[in-house]
Every structure is written in structure tokens, then in C-alpha cells.
Amino acid sequence: MRDDQNPIEKIISLFAERLRDAPGAARIARLARTAKHIPDPLLADLTALVVRLDDVQLVGDDIGHDLIEVAYCDLKYSDATEFAVALRSRLKRYVREPRVAHNARANLKERHAWWRMALSRTAELCRWPAIVLTERPQGINNRGDVLRKGSSAGRRM
Image 1 (cartoon, rainbow, N blue to C red):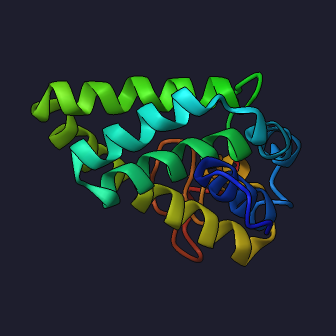
Image 2 (tube, rainbow, N blue to C red):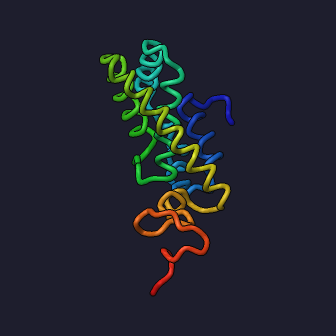
């Protein structure tokens, strides 16, 4: 990484490198390429909000989950400036309403656990997360009944 990168550019570049095999890797790569053009006043606003919020875990989780959703879901930003503006809006809301920040922490923990499960299962099966999570486990019929070996529930008559 270059030393003259802004903090958002460094974060997005790191995610672009780590998620290069994701279905939305091109979208993250575009964000990384355009991150150097984020205006300095916007970067200053983000810095002030992060300092004021004083919750590195929340900010990091928020950014990380947003980038994962760009990589694996349909979340799209036209460029890194739009990404930074959306982040600034969320951070302003967290600063203005502590209850929202508290709820976001809990929500991000749940989303983090979900993505961790999805991505570990995906890596295990070498498949895309949406397919893995929508598949019905073996031994379960359409009604959700567990089929036992030798049972007639799964046989056609």
C-alpha cells in the first residue's frame, strides 16, 4: 500500500484484496480505485465523527459489513465518495442518537455472526454464500421432517 493513501482508501484497498474472489469484487475494486478522490472536507468530517463517537469497534464493523455486502450482495455505490457520504450519514446518526448506535452494535454483531457462518460454510463447500444458505440440508424433506435411513417418508409410493 502507498503511504499517501487516505484512511478510507487503505481500508477499501485491504477489503478489495481480501475479497478479490467475491462475486462483487469488481465493485469493491472500483471503490478502491476511486477512494483517492474523496474530498478532504469529507475525510475531515469522518475523522471528527469517529473521534466524537469514540467507538472503534462500531465504526470498523460498520465499514466492514458495508464492504462485505458490496462484495456478496447487491449493495452498490457509484464511487468511494458516495460510500464515504453514506458512512458519514450513519456515523452522524450514531452520534446524534446513542440508542441507534446501541442497536447498530447489536445488529452488527448478529450480521457478523451470520456472515462468519455463511463464509466458513461457503469455504468448506467452495460455493457462493447465497446458494449454501438456501440449500436444504440432506435428510430433510419439503415439510422440514427429518428423514431417517430406511424410513418410508422420503420414498414415493
